[in-house]
Image 1: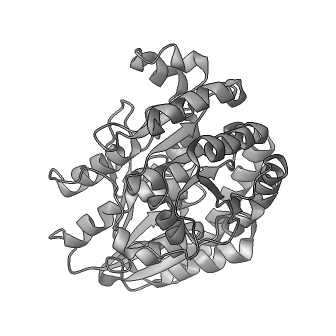
Image 2 (image 1 turned 60 degrees about the horizontal axis):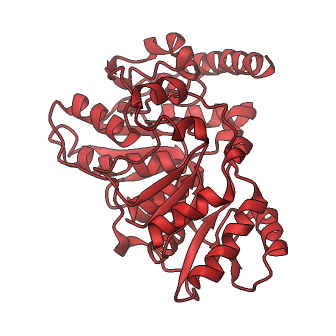
Length: 382
C-alpha cells in the first residue's frame, strides 16, 4: 500500500514538473534519436546488440544517437558500445525516484536537447522512468513497446497516450532476447539476422593477477528471494576446490562483501578470492570468459556467461520462467539450471510452467539441495 501511494504521489509530482518544463518551447534538432533503457545489467546485455542494427538502418543512419540508461551499467556500455552511440546520458534511478530537484533537472535537460525521435523498447514499461522521459522529451516521434500484460505494467494505461506509436508485442511468453528482436523487427519492418547477445572479447578490459584455473561464484542477488543459502554456497566452493582443483573467485559488488566474508569464514582454504567491488563490469565479463564454470543465483552473471560462451549453473526459484530463463539452446546450450521440485517435475509441460511462473514465483529457492547442485556441476564439468 505504501509503495502504491508513493508511486501515485511521484507521478503527480512528475505531472507538475512536466507542465512547467513544457512551458518553454524547445526547437527540434533534426536527425536526433534518443534510445531509452533503464532496467538492469542483464537486460542491457540482452538488448545492446540491437544498437548497431539501429545505427545501420537506412532511416536512422544519419542520426545522432543518444542512449539514456541506468547508471549501474555505464562502464560496460561505454566500453562496448561507444563506437555505436554518439552520446550517453546516465540516470541514477534511486535519485530520480526520491529527489524532486534531481528529477526536475534531469527532465529539463532531456527536454532542452530537442530530440526528434525517442524510442523506448522496454517490454515492461515503467511509468515512473521511461514513460516520463518520453513525455517530457516532446519529441515529434515518440515510439514505445505496447508492453507486457503482467501486473507491474498495468500503469501503462496512464502513459500509452504519451506515445505517437506503440509497437505491438505478441501475447505469448518469449525469451527476452527474442522479445527485443521482435520489437526491432516490427519497428524497422524487416527480419533481422541476429542470433545471440554475444560480446566482442577484444573490447573487454583484462583484470590482472588471476590464477590459471578458476571458477566464478555469485552468491548474491538484489532480491533476497533469489538468494540460495550462503552456507550452501560455501559447501559448493569447498567442492569445487577439492574435486576440481579450482580457485574460487567471488566478484560481488562492494555492498555484498559481507557475503564473501561469511563464505571465507566457513571454507578453510585460501583459494577463495574476494573481488568484491574491485572489478568493473567489463573486467567481470573478461574474468568470466577465462573461467571453467560460473555458479550463480539468477543474476547478471548468467547473462555474462552466455554472452561470452562460458558454461554456467544457475540456482533459481524459476521466477520469469520462459522470459529470462532457461536460455534457449538456439542461443546458448551449455547453461544448466537447478529448480525447486515443483518445476523439475514438470519440465516437459512448458505451458504449465509458463502459466505458473512467467510473472512470479513463490517457490523456496532453499528447497534446492547441495546434492542437486553438485550433480549438475558434474554434468557440466565431468
